[in-house]
Length: 126
Image: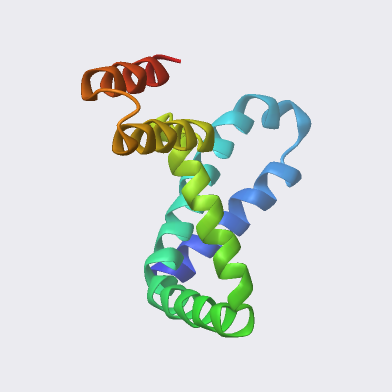
């Protein structure tokens, strides 16, 4: 019932804006517009609260359906997420590659532990 009253109020105030004489509407326009915005937001909140469980179930069904239909896209999404996390954390593939090379050099005994740590610190600074 509340939603019905909100809809009726929006319709009547919206119609009032268009039907008021121009001399009256210039002064009242902003007040009525503000009331309309508040009523529309109230309507959206009521509808969102009512429809949220339906949208949730629909979203879950669509996600599952998408994963079943296109499993190769899932790999692409995982790669994009991984790249995004790397950008956020400041790491790149070059950093990882250089770090692995330094660790391999350390394993082979070409450099000392201290030198390896220093090189890794230098890579992080870049």
